[in-house]
Length: 156
Image 1: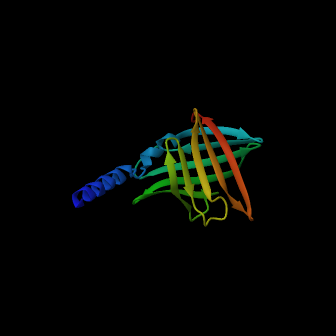
Image 2 (image 1 turned 135 degrees about the vertical axis):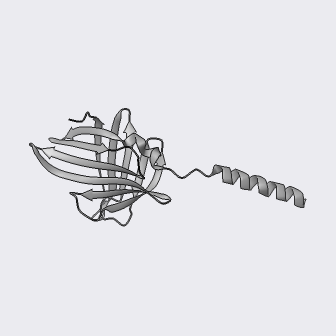
Image 3 (image 1 turned 120 degrees about the vertical axis):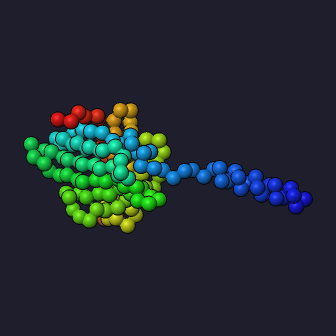
């Protein structure tokens, strides 16, 4: 009986161990890399991401309205030891705000910082050839979100 119990314990341990998923790597986010562009409400938007290299992906976002830059953001996604972190610097503000990786599956990724004022979540996903980004969270006690959609763009 003891032998059967030990065998069952080994089986359960091996199944549980096999169910563990490998930690995501920066390479699992390579689908974000590229030049993306779109427009909404008279604002031309562009976002550029470098491919994963040297434990980082570097990004830049710019909004242009009526021929003038009305907003920009420096972005990084970094592999920091055993975690991946999205770092945001709206209008170049320092220090960068960290959003650790919460989940990634295929071509959808969620970064989350529950202590940040707004947003608390940043989500990127591929939709066909397009890249979509969404921010979510609570703002002044109310749930809020914004979403953008960009198509592949050539560098000019």
